Amino acid sequence: MPAPLFPENDYSQASYAHNESTRVFDLLSFDLDYSVLEKEFKDLTTLAAHVAGTEISLLNLIDLYTQWTVAGHGFPKGQIPRENSICQYTILEDDHFEVKNLLEDERFKNLAGINDGPMLRYYFGIPLRSPDGNNIGALCVMDRSEVTLSSDRINLLKTLAGEIEKRLVLLKEVRTLRTQLAEARAVNKRVAHDVRGPIGGIIGLAQRLIRKEGKSSPVEVLKISQMMHKSGSSLLALADEIMRPGQLSHAQPEMEDGITLFNFKQTLEQLFLPQASGKAISFGVHINEKLGNITFTKTKLMQIVVNLVSNALKFTPPLGEVSVSLDLTLSQNHRIVNILVQDTGIGLSQEQVDAIVRGQAPSTSGTQGEIGYGMGLQLVRHLLESLHGTMQLQSTPGQGTSFELSIPIGRVAHLE
Image 1 (cartoon, rainbow, N blue to C red):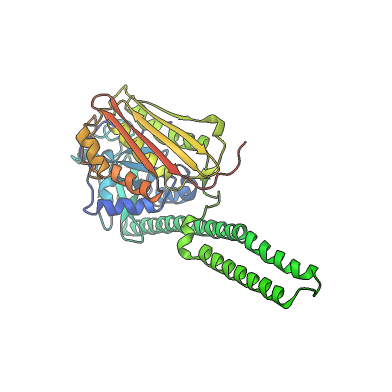
Image 2: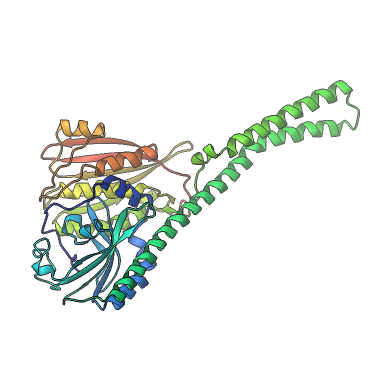
């Protein structure tokens, strides 16, 4: 894989919006898998490069710490630290952000790729806005020569950015519809399962009357009829309870949005091996291979692990280690995904650990000056609480940190 456009060689403070927390939560609400988005947007990024007449066009999504290039033309997808990106400035704009000569701009002249490598000079970026009005990323074009874009070309690029925004919203809506459909199917199955007993009881009472062929006394008929009435009323109450909207959240979703431990491992390696390699950190993902082909719902799990691994890489020095262990606990009543993220980083004091437990983690700098926003672990806590998961944190200053998570998951599928 080619080296990142801007490797981890500059850790000056990144710029961010006054509503950064809201902006990041908005991006997270799309619940995107960055590793599979290229096919959705490759045509638009290619068209953007042709419209602008530039060598490179990129679709970047920006979270707390990282710029994720999810699709592009003229350069591969990947990720870089947010503070090393140019698009971090684009998402602060309402219309666009342009740099005629990157080498002459104090903010960018020392970035790799500007004075070496592809020797990039020109940049033009358009913020990508969510329906709630938050800039969650950017469509940008870049070139090794200075470019002058006409107003017509700029308007065409804005049209393409608008189409990207529409597709992102469509992906979110499709995911929502799939979830709702899965919940509806799960409720139907639950109704079928839970009413089977009461219906069987009513049928049994009716059969008692039929078998006696009219020989039952009026008292016995009345008694059986009353029992059937009570059972039917209870059945209606049970159906109402199951179908109550508030109960949908307890339904077990189907596997349309599922993942296996093998898939999880592969995705994490694809996302973070380049970043770990750039910082000379050993990064590995370990799974219980015996359960590797079991499919389970992945909703919000990727966001949680991405935040923890990003944090671990940020606070682990070169030649250190970051590892992720993934396992499943399966029983009749409990289905849990177990996640362990460990690093040999700078570690945390007891005071810092207590602050994290209270949800008041302060912003701190990484091992090479990387800037933290003090919200990464708060995001993890928020997502974890929404999934009713638990987290155990252990850390020793100078030795490293481990996060151990247990998260209830939906009904598992096949076991090969």
